[in-house]
Length: 61
Image (cartoon, rainbow, N blue to C red; front, side, top):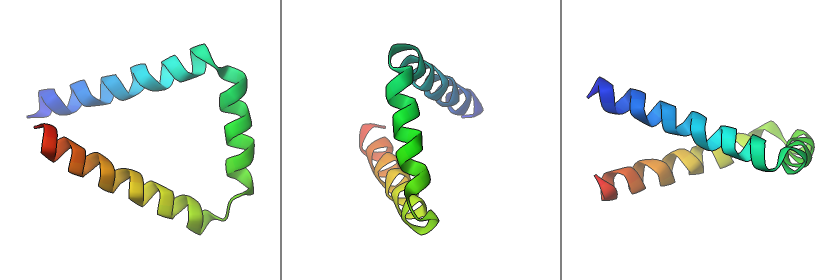
């Protein structure tokens, strides 16, 4: 089980790295827009992403 967890973390790093490598200016623009959002809105997006990720993981696994 811990091995799967570490593999998942590694994949997150790969995906994040790909985004930064392929489109650094787009990432910067997205972060500038994110700074304009209310922290409560960002928290809601984070909760939604967690929920979708968990549901998808359960469905795939």
